[in-house]
Image (cartoon, rainbow, N blue to C red):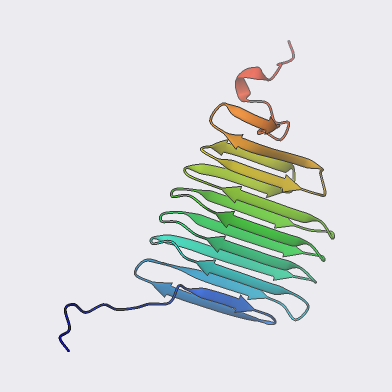
Length: 164
């Protein structure tokens, strides 16, 4: 039997923590998870050149999954909060931060940026979606087509009324 080529299989960096911390770095990216004794954190990086990080404390549950190259998924949770941060497209960045028993979900696709947490939900760029149960805010869409308020109610500087 002839061997035509040689390949190397490398498992995707997968980090999990409960009352501990774990991190894995490769030439193509990495993951990190930190959690106290009452919490859990999970992070998985499936994309080359990407990163997934999850941090949880005081009963929080944080989950971050990066599925594409040059993307990052960051999740933080405390005080019984549940956060889920996922990137599904290259160049996406998602950040979810949950607290006080709330749920925060951030999803970023191709070139998208999403945030869910303190101050509500924000989306920008390519495809993005976010939801924060504590504020009740959400956004979903991409480019110039959005469902919900992609700014989370924050007006751009050019639209702020200045006192005279």
